[in-house]
Image (cartoon, rainbow, N blue to C red; front, top):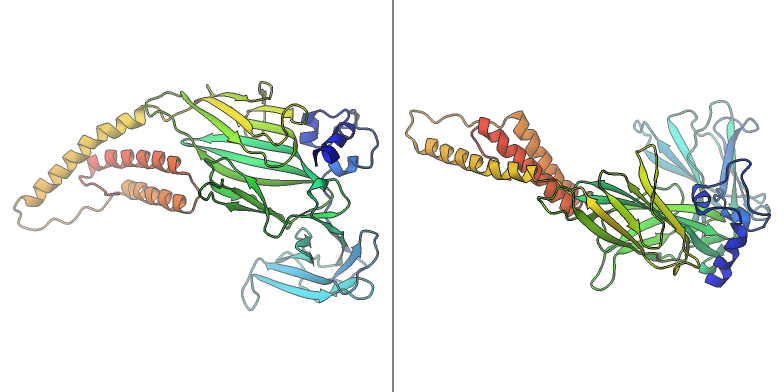
Length: 429
């Protein structure tokens, strides 16, 4: 596979720096690669179902033409129109569908459909284990909609695809790191590549938790597979890759351990598995005061401004430098910790809470003419308790990691303990 694919890249990428390849097409006037039939395959993949409004069709009409790669019509092909209603009710479900088979001219026509902005439509054409689909669209009130679906031969030959870029972006949140990975696939063939129905496995770091795939309007799916005994955890890639370049994106958390009384001396060595042959590795890390970043086999990171704030960026080609499937090893130093003040506040609150309990018991044992009315929690305490239990629910749902859960629960306990001094009661969590 390396000989067939990666040996063609020096010709295809002639004059393109790794940064230019990662970011997309070059600016006008920049040096470009020489003419090559395969060079087009490094551009973004084109949708296989395209359409537009047209005055040639009456309002409320969708006409879909299904054709092969030579533009010849395909008869008797199943076509589905999905409907998403924004105002369900009065007999109109939130989701519905219309289906039809193409005629001898490869055309399926749907008539009498509602127009306007209340509903959106999406065309899909099943094709083996793949599904060709359009982007959602609305029907204008004064015209119809014409679309074409291009059906390509299917292939599962991995020698026809490779990863152009493996990109990892790291953001630090107290107690955890949020990693977003973007895998940029290139299908060098003129066929539709399909992953096996069971999916193709790609490993994740062993510390990964709270996995979340990015939603996609294509048939590409990224499903999390937990670690089992000696088998590492990872993802299963499913769906199809049309000719050209396609991105698949997912995110997960990695807990970080910082000494409780440190002022920012935490360190972490993170190994990012790379399952497939990859031409370019890229790492981006959110800029934080005192945070140091190095990546094995890559140059020193450079600072780049972004809409979300400055990040440290480094990248390097992997072919000829390292094994293109070797892991990317990231070293982080000076990771900000919670600092000592939160823990000091917690320790200071413990005797206060104990004193409150003792006073409460003493009052309960003292004789009285009438039982006092129990004191209701203040709105502040009630809100803190609600936040505490919400964190537990988020952790159970896999939205936050265990270290972040522990850190935030300590913070809330501290605030609750400080609040009960003025209330004379203890909330048990």
